[in-house]
Length: 399
Ligand SMILES: Nc1nc2c(c(=O)[nH]1)N[C@H]1C(S)=C(S)[C@@H](COP(=O)(O)O)O[C@H]1N2
Ligand SMILES: [Mo]
Image (cartoon, rainbow, N blue to C red; front, side, top):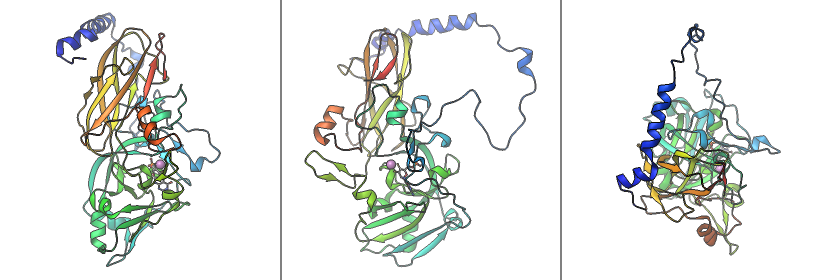
C-alpha cells in the first residue's frame, strides 16, 4: 500500500474526523461550577494517583503467590515508560525485606582482589541512567486464550529508567583474571537465584542498578540492588544482588538447565538463550477493548534485545498489506518504542497485527514461522506476531 501524504489522508478520512471533534467542542459549555472550586486536598509527602484511575497488575491465580508473576497493563500505558508501581513482577520465592544499611555485595572468585561492597560504597561510584525494557523469557505463552488482553499475553514486559554503576567498573576494581570467562550472579532471596553470564556482556553494558524511574528500586524490582542486563531475558537480571563470582565456565544452575532452556522439535534443548528477539504488540485496539467505527489511532509498543527498533509495520487486513507506523521519539536502543498509525475502521470484521524490524535486520516472525523452527514444546521466547480480531460490534479479541 502506498504511504503518500494525500493517499493516506483520504484513506483515513482524517479531515472529517477532526471536523466532528471541533463541532463537539462547540456544543460543550464551561464545566466548572462552585462546588468544584471548594478547597482541595492539601500537599502530601508521597504522591498517589487519582482515585478514578484503576489500572492494575494482573495476577494469575496460582497456588504459591510467592513464586508467581504479575503482569503490566500494557493496554492502558501511554508513552514508553512503565510506572514502577505497575512494573511486572516475577519472583521465584517472594520479595525479601532487605535493610540497605546492612546489604552487601561480594565479588570474588577469579579476581585479584576479592571485595565486599556496601550499598554506600556502590552509590559513591560514578553512575549512569538508561531507559531499558525488561522482559521475562516466559512472556507470551505459546497457547494463548483467544479472549486474552494485551496484559495477559504480553504483560511480562515493562520499561523503566534504571540508574546504577556499570558492572564493568566493579569488575575492573576487583581485577577479573584472564581465566574467568563467566560470572555467576546470585540473589539474596530464599531461592538464591543464580545465573551465569559471559564476561563479555558483563564488561559491556550490564548495570548494577539501585535506581528506577527517579527513585530507589522498588522492593519487587530488587531493592536495594539488582543486575540489569539490557536486551537479555529477564531471568539474568538477578534481583536483590548479593554475590558475583568470576568463574571459568557457566555454573549450570537450575535456572539454566532445568529452566530457561527451549526444548526443540528434535528433542535437543537450546540453552543460554539470552537475547530477546524483536517483538511488538498493538495495545489499542487490543483484546477486551471495544472500538467505535470511524477514526481510530492504532498504537502499540515494540522492542528488541538485539538493536534499536527500525521499523514497525501494521496490517489491518489479515496480513495482506502492511503500512509503516510512525515511531514516536525517542527511539532508544533496547527500550520500548511507541508506534502510532491513524486509521479508519469501516465497521467490518477484520484482523489487525504489527511486525517489528530492528537495526540488525531481524524481522519479527509470524506464529507459523516461529513454530516451524521451534515446535510447540518450548515455553520461552515466543516473539511471534500477535493478531487481534475485531468483530462487527467493535469487540476486540485474540485471534
Ligand atoms: N533474586 C532473584 N532475581 C530474579 C528473580 C528471582 O526470582 N529472584 N526473577 C527473575 C526473573 S525470571 C525475571 S523475569 C526478572 C523479573 O524482574 P522484575 O520482577 O523486576 O520484573 O527478575 C529476575 N531476577
Ligand atoms: Mo522471567
